[in-house]
Length: 468
Image (cartoon, rainbow, N blue to C red; front, side, top):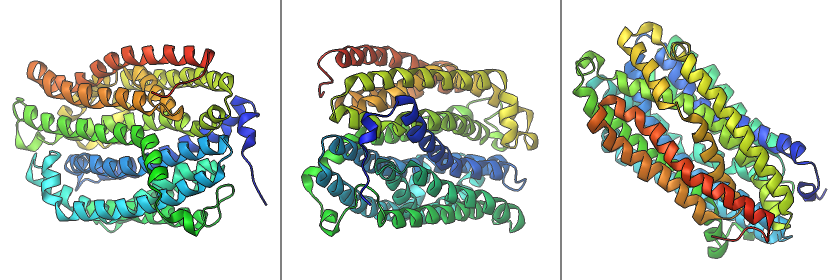
């Protein structure tokens, strides 16, 4: 039976958002839970504790590198397919999917090989040498996570492509299946078998394999796009356009890695100069705590990105069909929803930090751990509302095909501000300077984002959105 997605241009916006955004939010939340669930179980294992927590924080940015490449391919393909279908060009859409599959497989194998070949150097680069126990746990966790990189990247890159094919529920279900397996196996491997960091990593990889297998199955049962054998031959023009449309997703993730590297190393450097955290038995606490705060923020951002990224097919189709009024309506709804998500996160971070940190094993740690965690939540996330608005601005511009503006804004936020302030502010404020780098970056980014938001409204009200 031949399926069509013409309803993207006719159905009520609210109904389409429920159909597309909700499954995407759940998919991204579940994807985020892979690492977060590991950290929760690791933190509550008395034989791992904050050392294992710190090791998880060290390895986390390296999984984000894999995710950055995967979402560049997947989100770029999703946007390209949606715009192509809006213009009625199904052949280009099919070719983009075939090219995305090949790029995902090749890049994932290369990245896994690099990780395995330079394991020690990479871990050291991300602050894993804070003490001997953290370094040992980091190496163990990183090795097994590296083995699962090809499965992880393929599943993540196929997820937005499945949504573009008009099946957001399957995209959600495939990710959910893998995460549930991880949640079930984590306590078995960590507490029952006492496999430590290896157990957490193996549980994660098994879940990723399941998600990848389901993605492969769907590839052979696509509803609208249905790529054929010749579509898997690399087309330089199509693959380049796909990657350009996905470059914002890549840069927003990869620049986050740069910020994490700067933050981890600043925590190690200025923690060593601190009266309390300069002691060997407490040296891992700042890194473990900031890692936990980042995980909470990742949950928030997964919701924000899920709402916005889930709407990429709707935006792309309606822009391709030149229905600007529907795009403008969607943009207004998105901004309101993302601000509401940020407000809820702000309340939790400012008023309930002790309850949040208890989830990550604070009961087994010293009072220094809890006190620093409370301060970290309240400072680091005090401008989380602006962070949410900034993120939806990045993604919406990407969905409009305005890759240059989206990329520039994302790079300014994560590299110029994110890395810059993480390196500069600790000089004046010590460990607190690392925490202040987040809100300061978000305030300055919002100033630029506000300009682009107002300009986008003007363009949608007149002759349409121009390429930038």
